[in-house]
Image 1 (cartoon, rainbow, N blue to C red):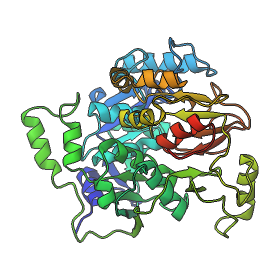
Image 2: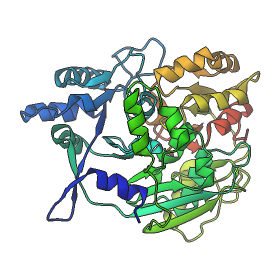
Image 3: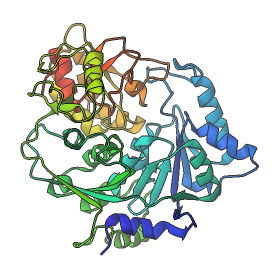
Image 4: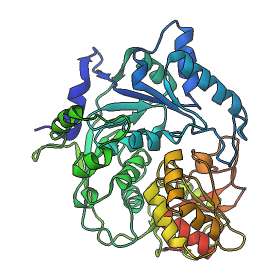
Length: 459
């Protein structure tokens, strides 16, 4: 019997090519300013137009500065040209753009769900590896390149080889203070950064259905760190309640029809997967990365591991040297230079609420730079309406405009060489947050607690 992936795939399969690929119908395309203009300008240069502009969207998120009072002029070399060319290309193509200053501006993978652009049962692509975030609503969403974006814009289709399937079942009940971010890091640490290589992964089990909607997005977001093709969760009452009334969601009678259709979007009881993984979260603890891959993560109370024979000794030693750590060393109590809460992984309102609860009435440790970047302008407004910005500012955090910000370094604002940063982002590769910067990834609660302590610490 079919799995959820089978149903999503079959709903969108148009034809099979001689080479065995499937022509898949694409329902939504989302661009951003780092690659959007390249796809749209190339399309125009070829004399082609966007087949259905109403199904294509773009956001200013990757290259825009997040400092208050920002403009088109950015700290990113060439950033101004990226922004202005994307603006012009979107206007020429008739694509909806969430521009700087737009009330709905923000990170693509935050904006799309909160506006109801992505919906259960849809296919959505974007030239960004974390597009899988949006599978949390029961959609098939994956990252593509600029040339694929151009093809999807022109034809409303893509040629895709059908991926193998995997179900990751999380059992048990999360302990207090342990989050979806910890679930993702524990999975990757247990099975490796290539553990989900090329698979379409359904996250399931009681620990998943117990997650709130935004936590589900965090879990699906990090499917790409597991090397997955896509990650998704079957939609349920939690999903439907969260989506109802959002700007692009169906309204009135159309909502009722959509809801009836979405009831079948789940794996049948006897569905077969190419691989199955199970992880009990009952004893899970807050996770922190120690190396330069999300797979190099451990519960905060455990020491940096010795080489185990998994992977290469050279890579293990290189990660230790880059991070300035030694085998057997404890991460708990390790002094930090900066703390960052943001990114498409952990920048939603619920993330900020939990972090604010940790820092309320306390002060960021002397010498620590602490930054909060909301995932969208809507998140920023909602947080300010709840007084979260005042809590963070009083504690000594910088309160920013929305965007990708210092999740990644591409020549603009960054942390310094050999600075130790604890971050709610999804990647800790060498120089991810700046040349030579040492990044430890963790949940927003752990980041907030560490900022206050001045050392890596659990909430």
